[in-house]
Length: 138
Image (cartoon, rainbow, N blue to C red):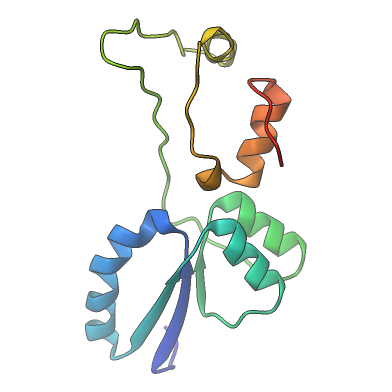
């Protein structure tokens, strides 16, 4: 536990609901104030690479590994897992996604695919390109 009276936390938006609940409890329990900056993970990663001052960064593991490799942070610990869902519109047949090949086939056969590119990590975009699911612009 830091002896600082103020800590700065960088976090992607996915953690916002949890941190809004936990940060006040942490502040009361430890007598500190915490400033949380929510931004897209790529923006936080760039800020850290550019020397931004922070105490805690909560980012996807691939981004943390990249920052470690670049010497921007010393280490990281896993604190949560993220689940991504796949859905089809009401009444549509449910695709077989029981294997990588089945998922690939289902995506290639789909008439349309909606996804949120801004929320996808760089490694996620690379994965989609590698698997040839769909064209992705970097």
